Length: 116
Length: 113
Image (tube, rainbow over all chains, first blue to last red):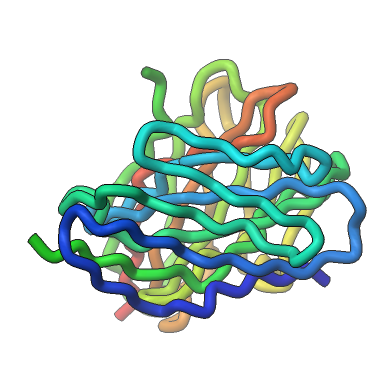
């Protein structure tokens, strides 16, 4: 069975601080995909990034960066110079690589509040 | 940029009534999904749909639930006889062939009284 754990339920930081959201996953599959989604107060789910299990290269996109470490089964997400618009619930998700087994298994989410 | 759309945004119904939640996936996407999120909880998978048939479903997706692609653009979720515990936000998602990202709609909030 697949499982995603986001141990941080809520985080509050002051604007412009850096913040890292943790994600730890469990799977028996050797190949899989990892995702981060953002859910702002308006409620929609916004896709942020996908990572393949065979690609451990870390990625930076503007103020966002992701650190994927297969050895520790972690896929952490860092926001640098946080802004009030970053306030949202962030979900980490896991998916098998197999066609026909495409469900996303989500973590419980981390509620991030950026204090102006 | 193309988006997944869902209607209605909020549906209120009485327990035991049938509801149909509607989704228009992104036009060149062929894989479709329904998820739900009970208030304050995590997002849970319900069903995936491809080539006019269900490819995977969760334990939640029992005989009270059904999905349909009635035409070339809509994808619907029907709950036959709603229960109080069906109250949740229901998200539709779609995916393009050859890509792994699922793009979600804005959700339909279902309230069962």
